[in-house]
Length: 322
Image (tube, rainbow, N blue to C red; front, side):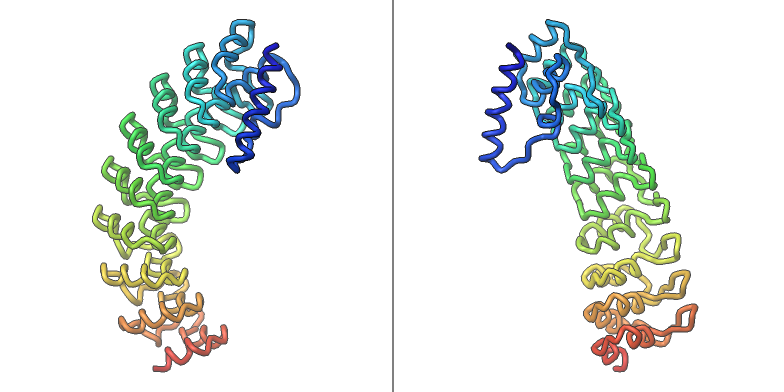
């Protein structure tokens, strides 16, 4: 019986994954009943093309979904089952069905780094601009997971480099905010706008400065026209964002590239004040070495020293007195 064969294969898969220290996919473990469409989804999860063919020949619906909206094709894609994916596509599986949270086979492929499967889905007309409920499309997911080959593949097929999710984040902002230089470079080379901002007015450069761990990203963005002193909606420049995180190397890079030392946000805060509040002695030292003004007051009348005293930062107070 087909169901018995699937159970046997599942047992073998579980034994293998236990040795390999992998997690059993939810789609394999969660289904409990044994109707033919559930058997089809199980078979897809374990790349059992023979059983898939037999089940479809005996009446299984190729596009039947579980209560979460996941189809056999999505299960095959999520588990990296290339043969199962090909088989289902050849039998008419719809590549653009969405789950209850808006995921498609293509977004599953992007999220799991399945480049070969992505190519198969694109050949069958997968919608490049399908967005999950959170607003992410395949290009954004590939950028988020640092998959430059997939980013390149999606861009070649015509993905919109400037598409944004619900908070206004583009693929470039996502890559910049994680320090992923390779996807960012590909996006810029394929026309991604350097001047887009999210719902908080943060550009890709500000996301990179806020992340603070990849100075090469900032240099790449500046090379492609990012303005080093353009602030976010609250008036904070990239330098202030980097100082707020205590990212000393990033602060130094921004200064070397022309950031204004005493730029102020809407509250009158400077990078020095942000570094003091962050408790970063190294960043404070660096800013002072480059001439940061210790006498500047915020809109509520506070100086960097006032902030250091409030935080009881003795070492920083000593630095500010020099």
